[in-house]
Image (cartoon, rainbow, N blue to C red; front, side, top):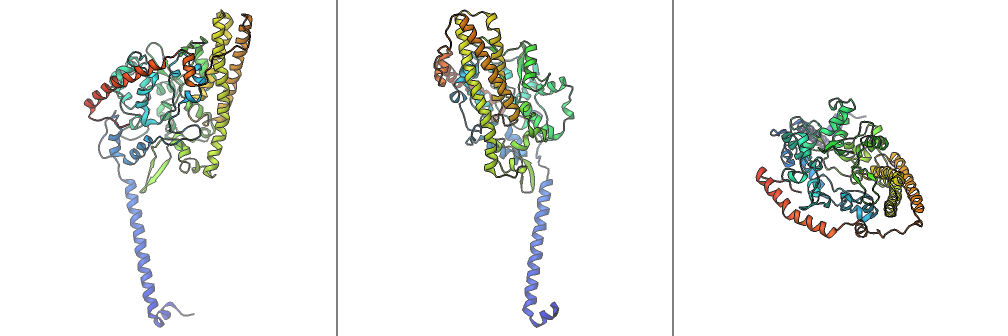
Length: 494
């Protein structure tokens, strides 16, 4: 066999070809090495350009130092995505389920209740919603601002936590202007995750736990658990408190509330002492398989991204169904269509039981009203009121959680099963009361088949409420924005 040198002597052109190929390969390897070094250096580059104040609430200021995170955060302004039951698109829950109006008679949620559009709209939506009232009636305490803005920790630092809670919601509107963002979860000096809402720290302390001892992965859920939890306003000072002392389950929280003799409101029709669940996402999630496997909230709702050799967390906080490849498919190898179907199948079953509970509860409240109108006694109605409280609390514990039960579908279905059972027991007991008072059962119920009809049934004057709210937005809110702009020079764009 001829050697390469002999082949080159016989065919000089071959030598030049080999030389050219060698030059190209060396050049390409040089480019690759240069790119690797450049990207590696970029990944180690210190991002912080200028110091950020301890309680800086403006997200755009943080964005100057962390442009990738800020750019992804700004994508939450997009509200076009809608999955089968959730997403960021606006949904009118009262329009979808008029039974809710009856179930919340006497409580602000009967006026308006929409699906959350995302963190970018936290301040705007709480200002606009009818639940917070207008110029004539606005009874909410400042505690209602607690989870809506990075301005809240700033004001707690300035006023003191207890004094912040004691204030009126309406009195702090000119201060609470920036929507949920960077400072809510991060230390500005180190960018470490931190807890800025004292209620979570206090709840953990009562359970004998110190926030400082939690791992980074646990913090990737706990920062969400500052707000995505069940809570109530304790005492005259409306002190924000998590009812976790006895445990996370729906029964343990109910036991806590019963011992405290607490109620959110008395139902306007049935007179039952009611509980209103907020959004116990962290509690329900903790009972699901993902939490059991060590998955954090951020793993699914804020997955990692890589850009220019830099790995960072995607701050476009959204439904994982709108980002299957970076969330679900990191662990699950099925096709996107299959994974979406898996989610829908579980949510369909949860939704079915939610609807059964809603129909039974709305009817039970109306039937209880008829019993009272026919001279039923407190003693006769005691068991009915207890069952209504227990049933609606269980329904709401699942309904108020984001994800339509997906965070822990087995637990959600268990809880809803008991909600339906107790609602039907309440209807049976009120039927016995009605019969004892000479009322033929079943009784005729008013038509509450639409949101508008249901609001009329419970006595709401929606025209007056909307007019008052419109006046509030044209006067008070405009004045809030004027004062805020004068104070800090700029407002976060919604």
